[in-house]
Image (tube, rainbow, N blue to C red; front, top):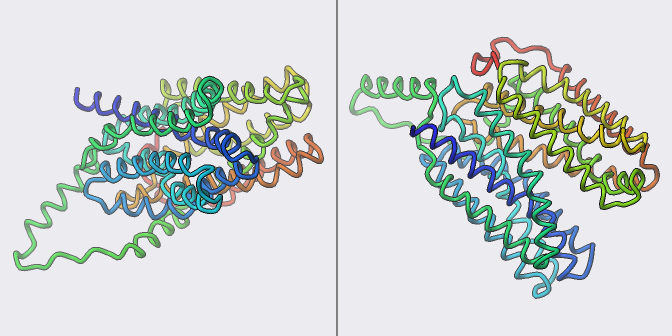
Amino acid sequence: MKRRYAMGSFLVGAAAARAGDEMSGPALLLAGYALGGSATEASALLAGITVSAVVGGPLLGALLDRSPRPGRLLAGALALYGTGLVLILLSLGRLPLQLTVLIAVFTGLLGPALSGGWTAQLPRVVPRERMPRANALDAMTFSLASLVGPALAGALAHLLGAPAAVVASAALIACALPAAWTLPMGGGGERDQDRAGDRDLDRDKAPPTAPAPAPAPLTADLAAGIRAITRTRPLARATLASVVSCAGLGMLITCTPLLGERAFGSAAEGTLLLTCTAVSALAANAVLARRPHAIAPDTIIWSSTLLLAAALVLSATGHQVLVVAAALTTGVGEGPQLAALLAIRHRESPQRLRSQVFTTGASLKITGFALGAAVAGPLATHSLPAALLTAAGVQLVAGLSFHAFALGRGSGAFLSSS
């Protein structure tokens, strides 16, 4: 009963934190425009809170790995992130734009806590044999958040004003604090328990006068985390493919308003396409949670890029039915790709570096998304079909990049059957 409760608490906390995170971007855009009176100021806030994730991810992950109570450190990061959102709101129109953006940059350092930092704690909650299903359920919280967060931000901004949406996003993140604070100290899986027992035996055998080894410097842990990602071939190819694929998704999201205007006569209809994508991603991961061993996660990674490429080609036609079909297909590719990526990270990450692998991976994906969005803006303005077809090509490159790495020997047995 304790483990079931812990898993339910984990999922509720993850869903609340991630929904608040998904709300924060649109809410800050709306608040920046409403209070600052400038689209430039609004976009600067969003850029500030996302660009620093590439630095914050590895550092936060290393600190989580070194902490004896990572749940409490995670809760502290969530609390500071929510506080940062409120400070940004309070500074809008009262402080110079540069200071407000600086607050956003410091807040963004903690952003990976809501994604990779949280997921890295999953093996502390469930035993190894239940990890495939638990991983798929965890991935569903991302899809649920992407469905609920932006819609809730828009509704609150319309009814109560943009500042209310920012406050609500911070409140949702705060709702996740109890679940993070009470995360267990030790690993929930048998492998972690066995390793802990081995360390106890080693201590019993050691001479009583043997000095305790000095902890490694933080910089050494950061370097070890980077090596774990780049030198573990299954992890390296999954990371590379997902980052490139995320760049293609960034291009698609940027094109969505123009696509809605072209296909349905209104840019606002583009948000409905994103809703279709989120719903199909949620449904696909629900099926995956019921059949977690049906397809190997490595296969899902590269095959999902083909689905995404096909969806982008369909979008480029501009035909209403095909555009809707493309949005649904995008979700079928995007949702399981995320679940598969998380499964590979759990399988391949060294125990002492797990949090860093997850937060660094999340930071890289955020960077890839931002780069894709930056490229797609000018390209879509010139030609929407060209931008969408370019994004399709990026997805094909993502699939090819996965196969650029030869299969590593001894990839690990953890989740190998999933």
